[in-house]
Structures are given as C-alpha cells and as structure tokens.
Length: 551
Image 1 (cartoon, rainbow, N blue to C red):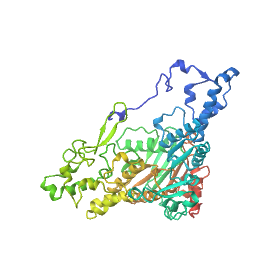
Image 2: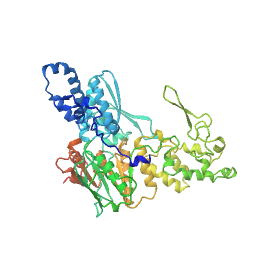
Image 3: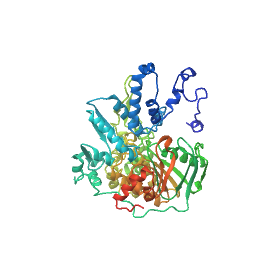
Image 4: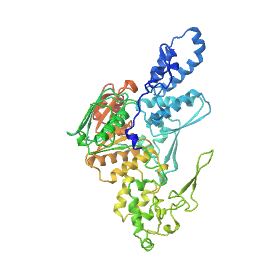
C-alpha cells in the first residue's frame, strides 16, 4: 500500500493498449482493426456500424451479427451512455452508469412478465437525461414487465403509475406505508412529507442574497486529464461552489483526478499526478478534504459514534461509575477494539463468520456474548441504569436525551441529528450504512471538530439517496462549514443544491469527447441565462418557479 502511492500504470508498447497480439490486429474492417473500433465511443461505434458497407457475401455472413450489434449499441445510446468508449474499464464506471448498462441489457433481453427492481437509477444523471430514462422504463413496462423503482427524483415520481410513500420519518419513526396511490392524490396527502415538498407546501428556498466571492481565488490552468481540453477554471474561496454539467462532461475528472491530486501533492501528501499546466492561490487553502461515499469502516466494530469520536466520552462515563472503579476498569476496557472487556470469542464483533467451502460465508450471532460484544462481567456496570450494550442500542435522538447532562457528548451527537441521522443507532455497524449515510457521518465529523480556517471540502453528489427534507438539512450543514471559514466545492445534479449555491462552474456542453470545456460560470442567475448550457436551461425554470427574477 505504501508503494502504490508511487506506482503508476503505463500503456503496453507492444500492443499499444489493445491487449491483442499482432495477428489479431491484422484483421481489419473498412481499414480499422478491432482495437480502433473498441476505442470508439458508443455514439461513434453506432454510426460506424450503421454506415458499414459490405459486399453481398459479407452481408450474408454478418447479417445477424450486425443486427445484434446495432441493436445493443442503440440501447446503450438510449440510456444516455453515448459518451462511453467500448473499452472503458468496468471498475471506472460510476454506480449510475453501471445501472444504466444493466438497463440496456434488460432492454436487449426482450423479457416479458419480469419484475425489475431499480435502486435510484437517476444517480449521476443530469436533469436533461431523466426524461430519456423515464421513457426507457416505460418501454420496459409496455413490453409486459413490472418496474419497481426506489427514487427521490421529482420527475420520476410524477411519471409513476403508482406511488408508495414510506415513513412518516426515518429509522424508528418510519417503516409504515404513509400513502399508496397516484401523483395527484399524493400531493394532497396531509400525512406525506414527500407530498408536501412536491406540492410546494414545503420547499427549499432560494437564498434572498448570495455570498459574493472575495479576493481569494483558486486558479487552475491547462487541465488536460481524460476529456478535459486544457481547461482554465477559477474557484472562489469562502463560499459554496457547484460543479455542474451533463454526465461524462468531466466533473469528477476535474475535481478528483486534477484538483484534489494537485492540492494533496502541493502539501507533500501524495505524488503529483494531476495533468495541468499551473496553479495559483493554493496558499489560501490550509487543508483539503474529500468527503466521498466510501464506507467509514469495513468491520462490524466500526460505527457512527466511534467515527465522530463520541464513543471516547461514553467509555469515560462508564469508567467513572462506582462499579467500574471497584472492579478497577478503565475506559479502555469498555472498548470493543481492545482486549479486556470485549468478548474474546468474537473479538468485539458481536458476530462470528463461518466459512463455507463451496457456498457464501455465513454470519452468526456470537454464542458467548449473544451479540452484545462484551463480557458478562462488564455488562454488570451500569450508568443511569443502563449497561454499555443498551446505550449502543439507543438511537442518536434517544442518546441526546439520556446524556443531556453531558454537554461535550451531546454536542457531538447533535451534529448527527443536524445532518439528518438522528435515527441511527449509536452502535450500528458501518457495514450496514448506505453511501449517503456514510458521507453525512463524515460531514458530521468535520462539523463536530474545529474546522480549519480556509479548509477546502470536496463533495461528490452528496444528495445521493437523500429525501427533499434531508437535502434541506444537508444545505444547512454546508452553511455552517462556510460560516466557520471553509470553502465548499460540490459536484451535483440536484437542482435544489444548484439553485442555492453561491457560484456555479458548468462543464460540457455534452459528455465524452464533446465535453471537457467550461460552458458558463457565475451565480445561478447568470448561468440560467447562459446560452448553450443544459444546466442553465433547467435552472432557469427552477428559479422562475420559486419567484426569482432571472436576468
């Protein structure tokens, strides 16, 4: 792992990246070898095979093959992936792209009577492409299939034949069907929080005034990674900036592979791999943090309170009780990461994994501790009538009330509540958390500690999996970071986030080779008026709908 920071990949000089030997590359169609064809985008390959001219004999041999090729490329084009190259590595695809490829496969299978279950297929999709996705789902339905979609996208909800709204809240306050019916009835349902946002009884307002950029700017010149075309971009510091654009326009490349890599390298924390000409203004940034949706831990011992450093205070409280002092127990004995008070059989996991020779491993509740993760002697120590296992079973909201007399602990827990995670249990295993929950726990961690003056926080689609009400809470958390002196840079498609940003950098105009340029920059009102901006076109409608004057 240490060496991987200094190890890179280079193209094979023998095959030039095609992975085939010279005999295979010698076979050509219309002057092109197979490597040249697979290097095409879906859109280019679709045109190539559509216009392919063959002799009568070649046509008789290749007729069925060409028919399948054209059909499958057409499906990929329909799901909005025309910018992907055919040889794109699966590991580099986003979750939304992978899901849309599966959709294209489903279209090609021509199944009838199947049930398709999709979990937020709009992830990573620009509003322009949502209509295309909806049409594809409708075509699958019209073929005789049933489509079940978990979704927060308003256009998707509105186009559904039937809507099932769960709630009324999250966690302990959820788990019930609040509404079941069509869209017109949903927006009139008094008990549905979703209905209230869709009917605009509740809404995320456009700020009455936006923060203006000051004299501090981060300037990146000549960014050329992937499809970026010698991009010059200026990012104002001390405010919230959104990086927008259609799927494949170069947003993640700019933020992850160039900007983040360059800033980490400038601070001596990573090798400089970003492909750019020069950078100015990095001296204004004290620290850079990438808050992504990767797990906060990979073992059952990782949980929300250990991540935000609140569990230290809980352990100290138990260690301060009379029973703990009589037994000479320290705070370390109440940790399930250290030998002592934790269960020796499961090592504090609460579960034991049984390896099956020819089947998937089976996870069983530990027989020694019955899933409590601690030795029975340690569970006899109680604080206000509860042992440490019972405390870890509390939700964040319950724990805030239980520990109301301990301000240093409730302050940390309140931050989890502020980002919409009050329903999580303190000891909930990190392996059970969604990507959106993991990202908000990381956000809560930064909010709970002293935010570095002039720190830069990078977020990649933080609204993934969030309800309208959760997005509202997320935006308030962003403003807290900004008031503390931080800069927020967000890659986002959600129009509620985009309309509330102080500054927008819109990339495009399209995806793939037709992207990688700056289409428009400035406050949302300026981008909404920009010609040629797909984001601006949808943003204009949103701002007008909120009673905002569009210049």
